[in-house]
Length: 287
Image (tube, rainbow, N blue to C red; front, side):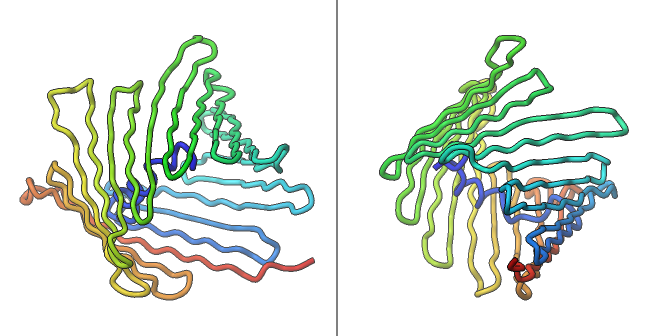
């Protein structure tokens, strides 16, 4: 288990599968016979602005390199190279960005390493700073402990660090973490109560703002049928979020969500969103 996976089950249930953040969202993904993956997505905002982008991924079976090219609605060009493994357990990715209108550029490299119970990730921003962020995790018998550090090379200073510990058992997981230089503390619990019901809770406290109350969220997912499920989430701030997802047919998914501020029912602060996603995969050609 990687460092980012320690709180993953809790965070996925609490944060994923809700559709209220954009009034309308659309995503399309297709895999053609030669292995090329084409995807496009777009979503509107309450102000009416449209964001989104197009991406194409080209795998080369001979060299083992996968090239991914992207172009976003705000005219950002992205290029990624997923390189073949140079050593057992090692994955490398190079990524660049370019914004022609601003002339800004970005370049970074990511190394992911996994060997037995140990995993590690190094992310280096080659142009900004440069800086690098590294994390590690060690897992054994369901328990995982990990940490993260970010370092600014020119300044010779640590920009941030964090730590987390977790445990995963049959149908449940728990975690505790300290981020933002060990100043923001979080703890969460996830359980699959039955084949149809999942529940997760999370509490967060910022020690730099001790006067503020602990932020608390609880979410649940209920499987309605073979192709549909609903989700609900409530926070201690009175924000109630509901969502419904239905797979209409293979590769076609519809989602609807609303967010209601129960403390401001008469104010125009509530949100609603609709999401469509289409995914198709053609048989991979054999050469």
